[in-house]
Length: 133
Length: 156
Image (tube, rainbow over all chains, first blue to last red; front, side, top):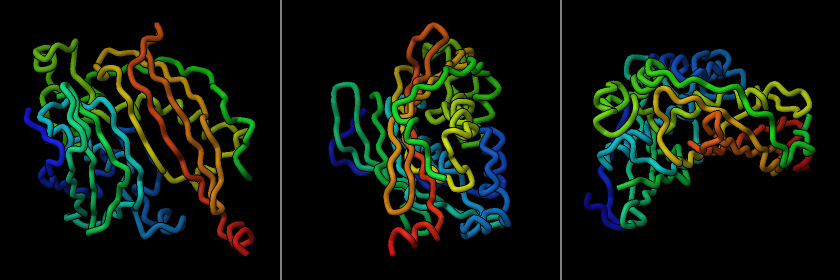
C-alpha cells in the first residue's frame, strides 16, 4: 500500500449544504434544532445553523478511507470538535478540507493525524485514525 | 443544576438490541456521500468477505442513540441538553458493523469534571452482539456549557 512515516496525504474537500444537514439528521436520528433551525441556533448563542459534529467526523472518515483505498479499513478513530461549522442558507453551503500526515506505520496498520479546516480555521483537533493496511 | 457526581463510574442498563438494516446503512452512507459499493451492494460486500453491506466508520452513532438518551432523559443525572455541546468522539473497532448485526449498548459513565464554569461528562459505550461478542467501543465527551451568570460569579 506504500504509506511512509511523514507522508503528507492530499487535501480532500467536501461541500456541506443545508440540504445535506437535513438528510444527515434523518439518517443519523440527530434532530437537534441547532442543525436546521436558524432561530433556535441564534437563541442558544450560535452564529446560525451549524453542521452536526458527527457529520464532520463522517466526512473525515471518508477522507481516511479514500486515502487508504478501503472503506472497511478504520480500526480506531478519534476526534475533538474544536469549532462549529456554520452552514449558510444558500446553494453553495460551506466546505470542509481534510489533510493528514502519516505518523506511524506497522506491518498491517498505520496511524494518521488528520487536520480539518473550514474557512481557514481548524474545526477538529486531536483527530487521529488507525487503519488496517 | 450541576451533573450528579454519584453517577461517576456507574454502569447503566444495557439497551434493547438495535437491528442494523441494509437500507439504513445505504441511507447513512448516501447522507455522508460514501458511495463505495461495500456500503450499498451486498454482492460487493460478500466479495470482500462480509455477510452483507458494511457500515461506514461513524455509523455506530445511529445504533447507540438510545444509549445516549438514557443519559439525557435521566432527571437524577441532571443533564440540561439545551446546554450540551459535543466535545470528543472516539470509535475503537473489533470488527466493522454489517447489515444483519444486532447491537446491544452498555454505557459506563467514566468521568464528570468541571473547569472554567463548564462541566464535562465522559461516557464509554460497549457495543456487542446479544451474546456479548465485542463489535465496537464508543467513547464520547459532552460539554455542558455553564450559565454565563454562574461563570461570572466563579471568575469574579
